[in-house]
Amino acid sequence: MIAALLALAVVAHVPTVRMDDEHGRPSTVGASTGFDDALLPVTVGYATGLRPWQRPLTLGATLTMPMLRPDFGDLRGSVYAELDVNRELGWMVRVAHGWSVIGTRNDAFSAVGMAARGGVTVGWSARRFAIGGELVAGLTAFTHVHTTTWGREIGGLPFTRATFGAPAWSLETGLRAGVLLGRVELALRAGFDRKGRLNLAIPPVYATLGVAVRWGADEWRDAVARGRAKRHGDGRAPQ
Image 1 (cartoon, rainbow, N blue to C red):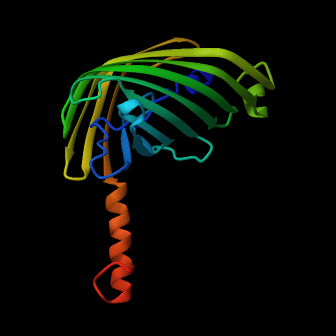
Image 2: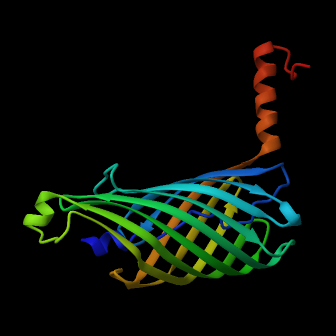
Image 3: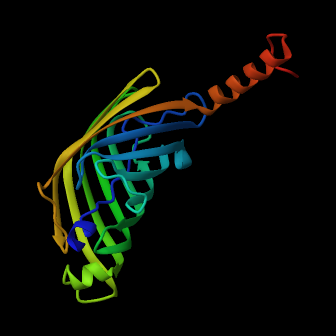
């Protein structure tokens, strides 16, 4: 059961199609599900795009919960950043880094852990389409476990509290693709997942499908201005 906890991967719901700043700073809200160490976990996330050093930088946060047996004790919160090395569209090289806090709870134990991940995506990027191969490495920095009476007496766990340092690692290699249809992005991740030490993945694959809606900062401000104008009844934004 502890191995099942440590099998939780650090998977960020990263927008695949480039976050273009054509309409001001872009933002996106989305959700994804599929198979990734668990069947049908649901991830919701928010991301925004910046352009430091004249290169697109995406910053985001996600929250994941298993949906087959929902429990607010089984949550994963993540933050991440992804930098596009190439300034222009075309050949795509992206570097990503993220951190996650993972919690789980069952009849035998409750646990909290922290994990880091880094990844590289290489492929092709157009204005409304992107595809590439990805290599993602993850490391659980530590996991703190608190066992229950049932876990110790019936489950045979030999401790009450314990902290495991660097108890697990993972390595993912696969395909990442996305298409932008109007404001809606469809994104796919699929590949093989290898895990080590106190970690286990059965089967050793991952496949997730996500959908997100994006907008630009200028569009948001224009919408607010139109709403104010409508309330004033003159059809124009107030001065």
